[in-house]
Amino acid sequence: MARGGAALYRAWWVPFLWVGPAIVAVAVWGIFPFVNTVLLSFTDAKPLGGGGAFVGLDNYARLLDDPDFWLATKNSVLYAVFAVPLLVLLPLILAQLVFKKIPGIGFFRSAFYTPVLASMVAVGLVWQNLLSDQGPINTALGKLHLIDDAVPFLSDSTLILASAIALTVWKGLGWYMIFYLAALANVPRDLYEAAELDGAGPVRRFIHITIPGVRLTMMLIGILSGIGSLRVFTEIYVLGGATGGPGGQARTLPFYIRDAALDPIAGNAGYGAAISVALFAMTCVLALLAHKFGSKED
Amino acid sequence: MRVAARLRGYGRPRELVVRYVVLTLVLALMVGPLLWQLLSSLKGDGEAIFGDAAGLIPREPTLEAYQTVFDQAPMARYMLNSLIMCALTVTSQVIFPTLAGYMMSRQGWRGRKAVYAVLIVSMIFPFESIMVSLFMMVRDAGLVDNLIGVWLPGAIAAVNVLIMRATFDAVPDEVEDAALLDGANEWQRFTKIYLPASVGAMMVVIINSFIAAWDDFLWPFIVLRSENLFTLTLGLSRMAESSLGYDVRIVMAGSVISIAPILILFIVLQRWFYKGVAEGAVK
Image 1 (cartoon, each protein chain N blue to C red):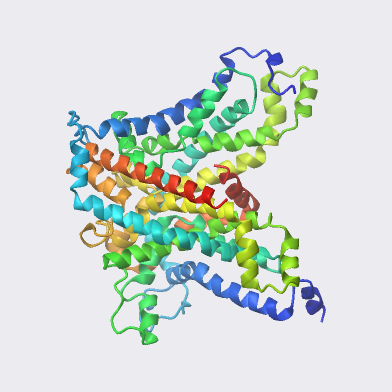
Image 2: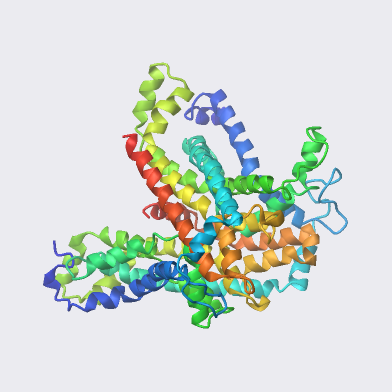
């Protein structure tokens, strides 16, 4: 029990030499900005200076009447509604597929992980070309006579969102697969053998053994991918262009915060801060929902 | 039949064949886009990329597109800027979280609980919900359009302190007790015992910070204005929007350049990458 005990004669200020830089940095760049965001949201501060007068709850009142805000909120919520179930389920299937150590499995695992490593901009540009009107996906669909005209993946705001969700999911699969691989290793093997002896097929084993066995990991991934969905910016920027789809129709909340707050000419940081507070509130709601959902199942 | 005999241990042959078929289909889905990107970037000027005439494999593979990227866009400059960002971030993310993580794993000093609380609270706020405020802070510091302004807010992350602390926690007390008997002071114990024991975790922190800095887009996009300061992701997206973007080969070459270094790192240091995911999950 010698671990750092009082017997080590450490002056009271010595520990702060060690933790000081880190603690100051996370307080200044991790906590203060949120307090500052809340304060900003009661002002009309401009991103490049000027403004900053107290305007009370004006920004929040404006928020409630702003169709662009509600559109961005809708887009972000829809994003989570579709991306979360896909990111909870598909990586589990993927993990199940690569769990068994058969020859060459290391190669497959690594290959499935590759999209995780690439920057969203780089893979987004690839997808943008794959999905363009004359791109290979439309060409293939045309060759199969499934479509007469190109599917406007990148010019219809709903399809931009759908394409962006597909991109998010594709890029996230490998990441969450690793979470599940770790979780699967903790599911007792003999449960499977017993079930197999009882005549349970692969689907039933999956539902009755695998899913309960990795439930906590599913919860964790649900929360992480939900928060991730509310943070989406780059997918929309690369696939839908700098405007965020035609007329900004595919903008997510972070995208709208960028536009509303930080545009050098028309930006209003105070208003953007109010949207930021709303975004944070949504993150909290999501985490609380997941928490409630998770504890109920126990 | 030795192969068949060896494979017998992996389950029924038919099941095994089905498994490989499914694996290959998923592989096509996961790696296909990246392969298309690589092959398109190797096509020559006269070769079709789109439409019925386009083949997947370039008929006469050439590095022309790569030549053009470096000639017509400041690609080397973008890469240099990204490398500067990575160097700064990796350095600060290794040094300070290691020091802090060590002291957080020591018991019995006043203020430890409060420091821990600050670390945890700092991880609650998603970047996107504080980026307006971060921009104002960077602006007030006069660091807009400056690489230091890109680096500073992400220079030290609480999660890395926690990762390092977990590693130091795992060092058995007996090792330290022995060093204490030898009369080693705290700094000596830290450098001789704890640092060597934490090399693995440091690798994880290095890799995570490097990739985060290399791949980041939104924050550099907000802070940087001048093209000669653009990081690779920023330069790439700007290039795709410019007239160079009309040539898909060039855009694909650019994105290969962005992905390749990370991929090489991954191949060389694979085991640390997976370890990183597990450590990150602690968060």
